[in-house]
Amino acid sequence: MSEIAEKVRAIIIDKLGVEESEVTPEASFTNDLGADSLDTVELIMEFEKEFNVSIPDDQAENIATVGQAISYLEEHAK
Amino acid sequence: MELKRVVVTGLGALTPIGKTVAEYWHGLSNGVSGAAPITRFNAGKFKTQFACEIKGYNPEDYFEKKEGRKMDYFTQFALIASNEAIADSGILENVNRDRVGVIWGSGIGGLKTFQDESIQFGLGDGTPRYNPFFIPKMIADSSSGNISIKYGFRGPNFVTTSACASSSDSIVAALNYIRLGMADVVVTGGSEAAITESGIGGFNALKAMSERNDDPLTASRPYDKDRDGFVLGEGAGALVLESYEHAKARGAKIYAEVIGGGLSSDAYHITAPDPNGEGVVLVMQNALRDAGITPDQVDYINTHGTSTPLGDGAEVTAIQKVFGEHAYNLNISSTKSMTGHLLGGAGGVEAVAAILAIQNGIVPPTINHFTDDENIDPRLNFTFNEAQKREVNIALSNTFGFGGHNTSVIFKKFAE
Image: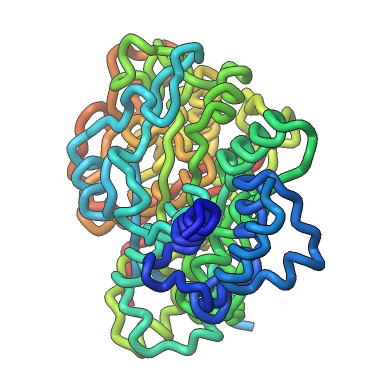
């Protein structure tokens, strides 16, 4: 697993209070990991802070699963 | 329209001298001081370096990590005390939750949340990175909102804010909503969590707080000649109020009846009390009239009594004006001598104290009395230093807030 993927998973585990085993690439933040709309906003902000990127709202809407977050950040992280 | 009778069927308390009602009463009846050096932050440069913190408070003892971090301490405290009161009342067993309200009190709301988020912004380069939970954590009504969400209570729901009178105002509002038939049950009380840099620094700037850093335990000394300001406390007091008919129908245990509430304003100064105590005279008269009783029927006054030089004197002057000769028959005490001043939570924990005095036939003391103040009539009984046994049929609780808000609530031993 890439360093980025490890960090993404750590943020998700911390913010959503979920078990490591639940954070699979297919897991949806809202459907599988118990996030509500505010949790999702907070996750995006944490990703932005951790990876020093700015994620536009229209792209943030497409980041709904663990795997989508990892691939977006692997592509855009500085 | 006939007003409904309102009774107290559940109690909850999270205080600097006890984290449950039983522990709180143990502290009150034994004259325990909750003051100690501040542990929440480094207060080394502050004029006041002590407060009445909830001892060893750890959110994870009460909340899952994810749940806890979305709530400021004042909301956590509100939930903890409400949980106890709701469980105590047995109300969840069979109740129409559309008819259960939550009317909570908080003078400030999420002060630490506001402070910390603002610091983060200030440390940045001007790019706004406000957390989505910032506003819902900070706003004062997140307390009543979270209680209703947890329990599914869909009745009236709001928070009263009137500084240190906030949670007496919430209790009076709850009383009146039930009296009018707008709810059968209301979870009420109040909470505050202001032991932060901005709370301590802000009250220090007002010269309102004790600076007795060499002896925190005895710093809160209402009516003592050498009192030098209040000691900041934190926590929550919760009550379940219910119409008598509703309580009777479900066979609930009844602690006391809430027979009246009064409100008034000093219309004088934003922080200083009116030295003649006219607004305080008015509020007690309003409460007595609302309760339909005469002053000589009152046994015990749990005073606002914050231990400030000006405020304590004005309240005593007002008590003597309202109660006349009967003032000498009263037991008077300020339980803030033990808990410190919970600001918007004061009315909640002090209502619990007044009700427990009725229940137990014991008046909790005003501790830390060393030297009489020659400006205070020595014939008044302030219940100094030790609790006193006394049959309490009627107790009156006073709270007053910056802004000139005054509120009195009157509780009576329950009889059919």
